[in-house]
Image 1 (tube, rainbow, N blue to C red):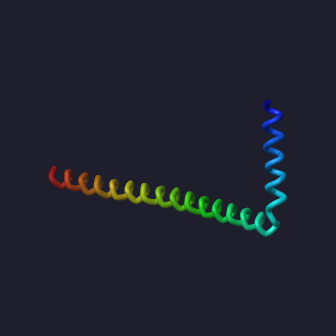
Image 2 (cartoon, one colour):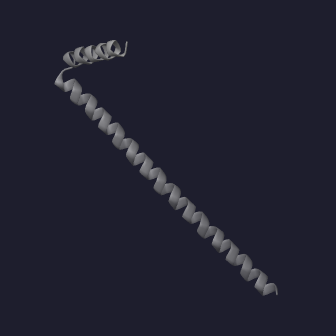
Length: 76
């Protein structure tokens, strides 16, 4: 049963490769590479932007707490 599935799959792959020209194969490979590159750049940008936003948020919270602390000390 499994060998029949593999033979059928191999036969389909062979006929598909025979139908595709070299230009078509290169086009699909280039499209795949461009897609992977765009995905990689997007993930890197998202990660770096998220890290930067977290850092800015922490800095703002530290400034706010420092202002509150200075205000409490002035009142005392």
